[in-house]
Amino acid sequence: MAEAVLITTDDLEPAVRLRAAFEAQQLRVELLAPGESLSDALAEPVLVVITGGLRERRARALITAARERGRLPVIGLTEPTEPTGRDICRQLGLSECFPKPIEADEVALVGKRLVQREELREITGIVGDTEAMEEVLERIVQIAPVNSTALILGESGTGKELVARGIHALSPRRHRPFIAVNVAALPDTLLESELFGHEKGSFTGATDRRKGFFELANGGTIFLDELGEMPAGTQTKLLRVLEEREFRRVGGEESIRVDVRVVAATNRDLRDQVQLGHFRRDLYHRLNVLRIDLPPLRARREDIQRLIDRFIQQFSAEHDRSFVGIDPQALQILIDYDWPGNVRELRNLVESMVVLAPGRVIRPEDIPADVRYRRRDSLLPVPVTPQPQVSSGAAQLNSGASQLNGGGSFLPAAPSPEMEFILRTLFDLRVDMEDLRREFEVYRSRQHEGGSIPSGPLPFGGYQPIPIGLPVAVETVPHEPEPPPREEGTIVFRPGMTITQMEREAITAALLHSRGNRRRAAEMLGMGERTLYRKLKEYGIEE
Ligand SMILES: Nc1ncnc2c1ncn2[C@@H]1O[C@H](COP(=O)(O)OP(=O)(O)OP(=O)(O)O)[C@@H](O)[C@H]1O
Figure: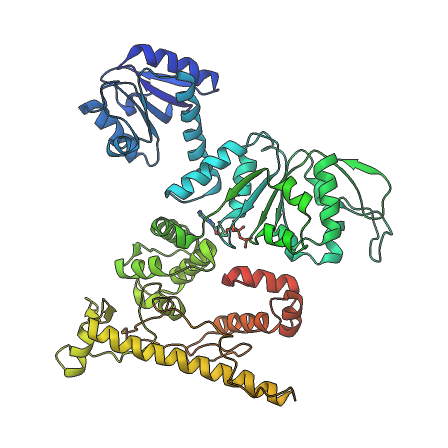
């Protein structure tokens, strides 16, 4: 069935002008006569425009029917005498409102963008209804049709590649190749030849002439992920491609011209990299023309439930499991968690729970301990022994901090002020002890290295105590004990840990030990750099 914008004829004059304006935007239009509903339309609606009587029964029925169809956007035209504005618009369940008399071209432009936003969600699978994500989608729609370079900034796992794919998919280049290159995953020695190709014999192993990604992407888009990791020599060559649209293959003399749109992304602060002299200032300015900032997941917690629903649906189908959803308490734990690995971490977690959870609903006990223990708003790292009967003396102490759920396990609730005071004091004490212990170890290791022993007081101040109110947990659920704090370069085995969890620990420890140097970390772990890179992504490990 063809797709069309449905315009009601409640007010015929603007309806006719809007039809012409939408058609000028290459969108088909169908007029909906008074009394006709969405199901009377011959075409599949992609947008509904209600030209009058917004508070009347028919308009309300159309809005409800649009909602029932998922995400069908609705624009409403308000009378000059009617109140208008974003709040009114939301109250009425409309995507956008325009007061009469309207500027038909403006309404059609906004309408087209709404249609494209939904198209974008469908093509890329981007989930997010928060204002921050709506803005991101709007930016993609604006940026897509032009040819300029685009820069996407955001923490790892926030969806930068999805956005880059969205820009390509809505652009006139969409029928040409989209090539994604992860700059950090390629060793420096190979990067240039992978990007720009090489001539036969240009280096050991170059047995043939080979085209690089820029040539392969000709006419399309190249996505350079983790651009902040690009070595200086390659940055210079990239700048030349951006400015002159040409380059030479490694070991080649001939200049090759290409028509490639560059979309770059990084999770590093490129301005800092410029200040530190690690990134070319001119390249930064060349790239920073059109920019999209992706918010971390913890800054848009309202999207978490939608993402979980989407991933449960997706992975239940993929793994042939009949999952129906998530228990409200489990959902709250996931909403409260800080998601350092962002959407990727959430996606991986939901997949593992869909595969491993015994029931058809994700329950709090299906959530791995490390996620439950790092809850944003929990209070303390003190495990409280669970009390099976709430009537005992110990349980009374506990009762302010927990409530019994239907399944018989204790769930954290706000502790009483006395309880909170006691637990906070214990926590402070623990932090102080931890600081003392670390300071003492530094002192002792200096002594060991034969360095001068400070005669004054011990060098306090080198460590940041953990601020109160940060992710620490009062754990009253009768499960795993609280994991002991990690020391730099130490892997702690806890009973119940899986090989995967051990591997995650080992990778984190190796990175700490190598101060973030991936190559050294990979060597220590006896794995290839690419494998390490893949695992960092898989486990959502932040460096
Ligand atoms: N808004 C979103 N809706 C649905 N899925 C998402 C969203 N954001 C990210 N994802 C999913 O999370 C995973 C990571 O996304 P993506 O690779 O685009 O992140 P990234 O920011 O490019 O990460 P990195 O910086 O590590 O390369 C992918 O599986 C992607 O499909």
